[in-house]
Length: 256
Image (cartoon, rainbow, N blue to C red; front, side, top):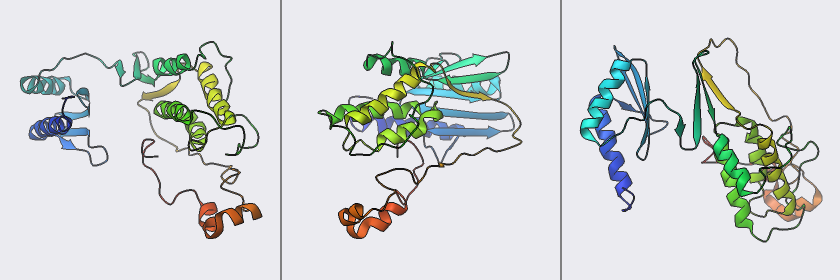
């Protein structure tokens, strides 16, 4: 599967065809997600290359599917979900909840930067004025900074509390400086003080909806001010650049 360029495509076509014949439907939002619904119950199957997550309401229905797939492919049943693509799943049987976290992945980031014994902090972003692309001295190795920030983007899957901070440091990828590197290290210090945090999944009644907005939308110094110097530098593109950052809305952190 990993040797030829077209092998993963052929494998996915072969596996998805088998699921469709069984009665699954492929999700239009995520093509690697398959859904099955019948009078016996509901099943959801998530496929990543050759790793599979399967869940459903009926244990008999799940057993029937695993038996069917075992006849078609060489498979191993690893039991309850504990670890998948760097995401740890911890069950709490008393409350019937599952905690999704990335503690091991976060520790790997701290170890990579030799910050395992760093001093923790309570917030991922320092309070005060926003940094500019002109602050600090340019880093000699900009690719290293991009690699570090790219590793942070994967953590936002289970840590939405750092979404703003990761977006903040991502704005300096094209020209990172020593100041921007300190912003990144503060996020790691925040990790040190909040290891094991994540998203808790459980059944509950939805009685209210809470939403958050960027109250400091106009506070970024490089794209939100219209000084004379910026007018000269940007020319005719000033209005479109300062009105909003991008005309489209990304549907995922990877797309962003």
